[in-house]
Amino acid sequence: MLHTINKSPFGNSSFETSSRFLQPGDPILFIEDGVYAVQANNKFSAALNDILKNNPVYALAPDLNARGIEEITAGVKSIEYEGFVELVEEHQVNSWL
Amino acid sequence: MGEIESESYDDEIVKKIMHVMREAPHGTIYTYEGLEMILIMAAYDQDISVAFIDDGVYALKKGQNTEGIEMKGFAKTFGALDGYDVEKLYVDQISLEERGLTEDDLVVDVEILSSAEIGKLMAEQDVVVHH
Amino acid sequence: MNIGILLKEGPYNHQAADTAYKFAEAAIKKGHTIDAVFFYNDGVINATKLMDPPQDDRHIASRWANLCQKHGVQMLACIAAAKRRGINDDVLIDCGSITGLGNLTDIAIRNDRLITFGD
Image 1 (tube, rainbow over the protein chains, first blue to last red):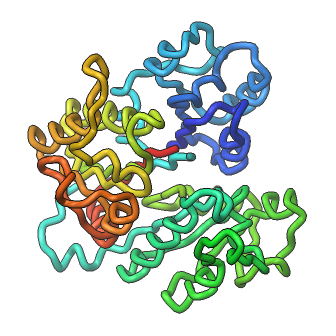
Image 2 (image 1 turned 120 degrees about the horizontal axis):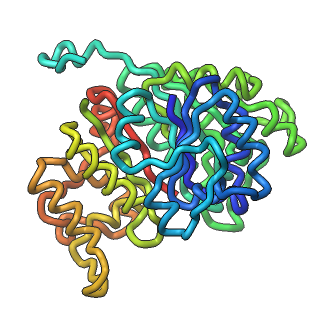
């Protein structure tokens, strides 16, 4: 199952909460303000590194660029909307709001 | 995946649809309109479940009196869900505990599950809608 | 693949309407079918033709109308949510229609995916 997260982790608990429900192998895609979670060297990097052990993590490139986020946590893959579609082809979607 | 051709085949499809309540009642309309969605979907013989996570658990809290804010109260409608064949109501244990609540504080019978257990159920769904 | 979209947030206030549109565009480009965009909660406000943003900004309602006219994507506003928010047939974008949550249920049943965009 693909989990999408669209809220900044600094303002909303979606990232923290959703982590409890992840199954191993579930991909996570950060979109919109959610991409702040993957900015390198912030207070969520450790949690992200833990998740990366069992789950592939993606962030939407247009949202990273819009917010001037250049350096992202190692292991997180930056993808385009086309990549978002590919993930949807492979997984049912669980959009955390 | 093949295309669905005939109407009667459509009638036999049963999808697992989970509604996720994560917002507190009244401050925003999401829980209320989410409940309206569940009630309508209930008429379509699908496999429907509802998970209450984070502030969503507050929607089930006893003793809500909305007279003073002049908004419709709807907590007791959750109690009517099993009359609509929506019997799978799951409450996230951590969300309940964080808020100092127990099963006795809730207006309806629910299954209190760990996040891991609810996560497993989520992974089985065809459709998940967050409210 | 056949995909339904549920949009639960109004235009401009939140990026959800934009992300939903960009996703729909990308999915269509890859050869998928977007069956419908169903507007719920404040999402119904996406469908008003009275929308009048500045010239140099994207026109969200027109985008939805175009998707409908060019690619046959149904634009559906929930009647209960629409009535609350003053959206009726008089103000609805061309190609849009007002319908019930039963239709959303059908969309969830008959498509391979139902994806939610919202706040």
